[in-house]
Image (cartoon, rainbow, N blue to C red; front, side):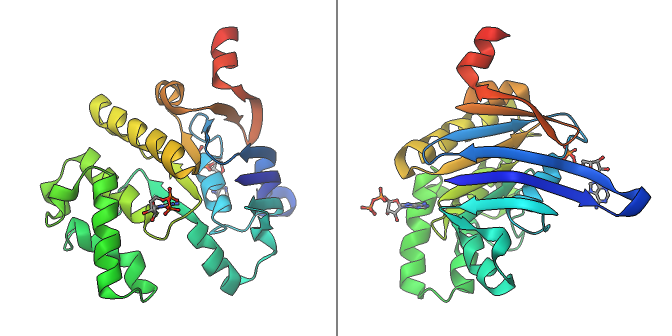
Length: 232
Ligand code: ADP
Ligand code: ADP
């Protein structure tokens, strides 16, 4: 479960101050996919950065499983961030490492034993349907497959929340459909809370349980996707 409470981000101060996120209230219950959709400049990237506290919110709270991350110092934050897996538009894979090695990286940083890591990586590759690509390098994979490896890596530390920042943007419709199906499977089987940030309304309709429309740093409309579609 992730809750954003009056989340606000102001860049600069005095006459140069720009309010990029303005008191956002928003929750992603466990086992749900909540989309935030909005045009370029709406504040989506800033939101993604604030949720992981890579950017400190000016005020408001980011609550993950009951803990307010904005109250944490850097050391506690490093640990707490493991609860949030992130995927981006760029898959962020290391070109000179195989799919399996890329997925194993977060485990290595934590000093998980080699045997445990191997087992975990095999399970994760299987989960994203790419067990047969373990030894392939990123350039030998399609964009959609690379994104699935990115998802496997994001799951390596068993997060309870998955943050997807434009993860399907730039993918062809088939690859997007595969990613959408995979994220729904993760929602249903692992009970993840998935915050799905995108500018693509088409994808929102396919994937989301609830949607919030962000414009100029404010949520201008929100609700269950079925209700919004009915009213549209
Ligand atoms: P989106 O991802 O929806 O395109 P962004 O979060 O990138 O939106 O940007 C939203 C607004 O915040 C834009 O007007 C942008 O210029 C402004 N902005 C983003 N980062 C900064 C910053 N570091 N300093 C000042 N303004 C910023
Ligand atoms: P169990 O509690 O019996 O492990 P789960 O349904 O919780 O059953 O998990 C099934 C499998 O999925 C386990 O192998 C577990 O490691 C993995 N798993 C569970 N939660 C997560 C998560 N949040 N991210 C990645 N993998 C997970």
